[in-house]
Length: 168
Image 1: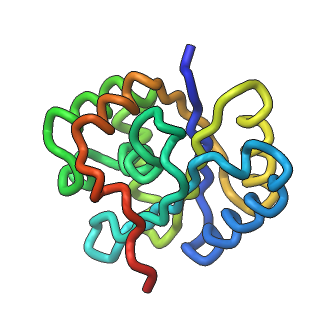
Image 2: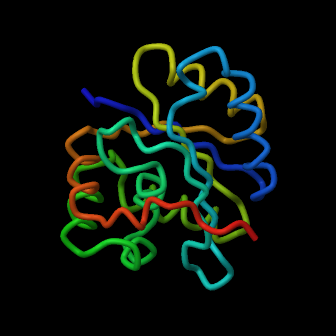
Image 3: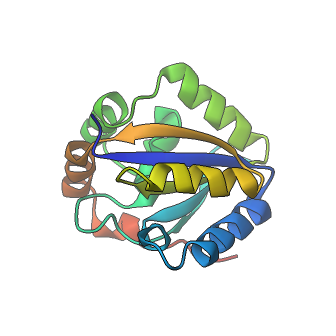
């Protein structure tokens, strides 16, 4: 069984995704969910990862949400961020995604949509995050993420990749 889940919601555009993150933080402010790593992933016009708006690191247990979100995309998009060994480990062991899942998500993002990801754990958080993101207009799905995969990526990726992208 997975240690954590990534609740992923695809929104019509980056502005809708940003609003959903703010609403989620506000509505869940009295729960641990508001303090979980959250981020928005957008793919630019050139087909490359354009921006990561990162939340907290995953509580000292490895890579931040930005890398988890990046791992949802095909290897060609992630390759500019991490090396080949990390890429292979995270893509093949870290998330229960098929190549078709990654291609589908990348196609939606390349079409101008944005993904919101929340790294959750426990019995109630996945349901709570999924319900709220759906209510805010996202098409929601969940994927398992292991602590082992998060720790492997964190050990191999420089801390610089965990800093938020410049707003713009």
